[in-house]
Length: 82
Image: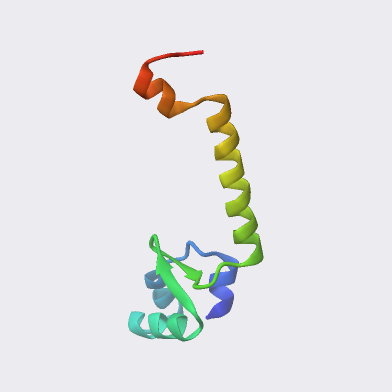
C-alpha cells in the first residue's frame, strides 16, 4: 500500500481499490495506518519530507523576490506604476 502512494500520489483510493479488487474502506484504513492523510484529494505523508520543506522555502523566497520587483499591493492601493 505504501508503494502505490510513493510512486504516484495522484492515484485515487477508489482507483486503487478497484485495481486490487478490494473494498475502498480497506484502502483508506491501510493508508491511515501507514501515516498518510488525504489532502486536496490525494494521499500524502502527514509529515512533510525534507524535499517538501525545501520546496516551500524556495517558493516563498521566489514570491518575496517577485514582490520586491512588482509591489502588487502598492500598485493596487495607490494606482501607481513604475
